[in-house]
View (spheres, rainbow over the protein chains, first blue to last red):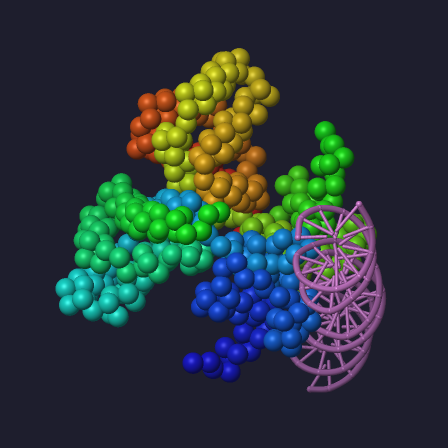
Amino acid sequence: MSSPVENIALIKSRSLAVLIEAEVERLIMAGEIAPGDRVNENQLALRFGTSRGPIREALRSLEAGGLVELKPNRGVFVRSISLTEACAIYDVRAALFGLAGRLCAQQLTVAQVNELKECVSAMEKAAAAKDFDSYYPLNLKLHEFIIDHSGNPVLASHYRDLVKMLHLFRARSLVQGGGLAISNSEHREMVDAIAAKDGERAHRAHFDHVMRARERLTQTEEFQTDIKTKKVSR
Amino acid sequence: MSSPVENIALIKSRSLAVLIEAEVERLIMAGEIAPGDRVNENQLALRFGTSRGPIREALRSLEAGGLVELKPNRGVFVRSISLTEACAIYDVRAALFGLAGRLCAQQLTVAQVNELKECVSAMEKAAAAKDFDSYYPLNLKLHEFIIDHSGNPVLASHYRDLVKMLHLFRARSLVQGGGLAISNSEHREMVDAIAAKDGERAHRAHFDHVMRARERLTQTEEFQTDIKTKKVSR
DNA sequence: GAGCTGTCAATTGTCGACATTTGACAATTA
DNA sequence: TAATTGTCAAATGTCGACAATTGACAGCTC
């Protein structure tokens, strides 16, 4: 998994700060540090065996990515995403994904379109068999493929930031697997639009796909908050 | 312009790193440090009378914003945006601005729409009189207004990052004032669509507006590179 | 003279220590 | 008892110094 060259490249990538940034991001994504939690600089320095300098740099970078929040003289905290913020993120994500679809429709080769078609077919099969364990990675792969092959690194970078931020949404797990077969018919439409090289149609399909996920989110969540407001005030 | 309270708030905003970040950003935006230039840490530390710690933190944050680039053991350099990258940025910007238009169409009050209408009218007047000095700030104000009133902070933040990055495009000044009256008819359509509360139409108007600016860019620029390739190889 | 090697100043990467701030808790007062 | 004040440990903000790396230039070899 890690050849010598890779290791050297990794170590030399700009050393500590970058490594630490990646590791802390992993910790956050894996939920080992939960939203709202404090990220202790000393603790991290001790853990990685470095001084606090590189730690602070790494955290600064993560802050810009929206994963953590720096409160003056208080420390850094893993950001906690509210329903409102999650919706805002979904909107932006939809716009970016719509663009990705449009670009793919304009640029993809026949071979690449076939890859997409195969992917969706596999998903349909998995969905029919209710094989969630197969479905989820395929779904991920499909979205990644579209983003990567949009040929727009700025788009890809911003999109990934948004996806990361959505991981910090508390009730995220509730929506994750929701609407399996429905969602897949949307995938089919996305790929068809791309195959037809119809940019406008692809845009709409991709945009709507994310927006419907957003829709499911608000519906599930309104439910949630209704319950919660009965218990906790604030 | 700066009340005592504001000053205190500013100084306490997290002190040096944030202040330095803002100042370096200003230097870059003002062109005092040009794209491709090296940003010397010691020099900045000396200039601001601090140690290099806060400087490095500030630069880390700017890197995430896409304004500078960190080369391992070499230093940080102000990013230089190529035509290709500028186009990529324009695409994303168009997608975000399209979303902003859509959201404004859904949310703006009558009073706010009237503000927009007045702004466009003033611009038409300035355009007719070829009064560029009046036109430019109005144009800025219009775009800012739409972004701010989209009610989506994530959108606003990402959009602003893109605009900043576009400042680093070398031939930016060439396009800046281009297509004055043309551009303004597009503004009218944008505002009309918002006034009509037609989200889809507003989306298209806003999206196309940016894309046409992009179009002007590539056309002007192809010209440029044609000339330049005759002189410099590489 | 071309190419390789070794040295050197400049600059970045990292560290450990000190100053400041914060929130919590105890002590004091009415 | 409730509110205020004082104290303190923990953590952040900042600094100055040292180590490591880089690119350039001089000197050597052939």
